[in-house]
Image 1 (cartoon, helix red, strand yellow):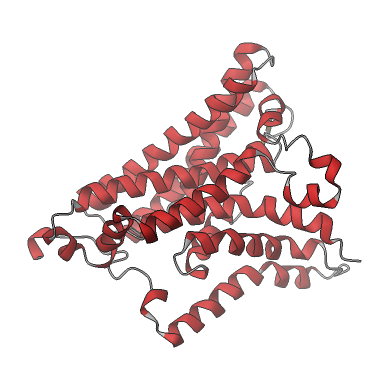
Image 2 (cartoon, helix red, strand yellow):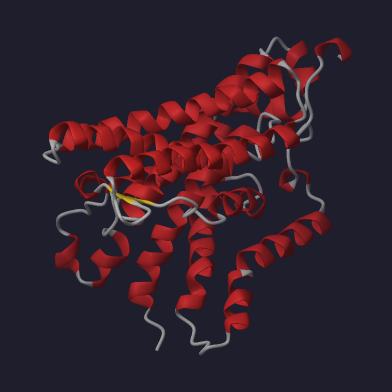
Length: 329
């Protein structure tokens, strides 16, 4: 029998890294920057948080305080993700390098960076297994609301998550409001639609691209931190992220560049991602692999439908992936 009460919390937990990555990439793409380095950014954000938590736990002998156990990994994650965003902007905005190539290179760099420092930390611990367990720090990230256990299935479905899960939803809704209902959002979208027109109107194109891309990377990095500290219970293993970063990019297309839609869409993707665990397939591994393809199939179907409808509001920013040359204005 399909256990919906246990399925929904797992789907939500699976969706939070996707929601962070999707929100961060949507903000970035709205200014015309196509950052295919999001998987690498999430990886760097995660390992930066792990490094901060590791050395803090080592310095205290495991006797951590809640405030610092959350603050240090959080700031480390944001710093690492910010530097990745800064590097991407320097290459694509200042040096005008190809955005597709730069993004793919940053993904490769981010994964290698994470594996290198993750492997180094594992050697420092002298662990017999290829992983690091930061259980003391993780307990503060995964702590749910105190009254959740008293509410039965309602508490399990709605109130059994760590603070980063709720923060992801808040960030997505705030981003959607800013993009659609504020002057800053209007200027930001104009940069992605027609940078030459925005430049002629006195909008600083370089500043907007730098700020939004760095903020987008910091948001995406939180997805990596959530995966390690909450979803994986503080256990870091090299190459454990899978394809979640790419799913987050696919989710941007699925949501038609709207962060508010991403809140529910990410939960749908999270459910599709783990659906094969809840549907009996016996020993037929090929059927399980087909179920794992569902999120990508759904994205392709949505892309085809939106292309057929050809509504302007459902299309990507007009200058997405294109570098701006002011002298051509």
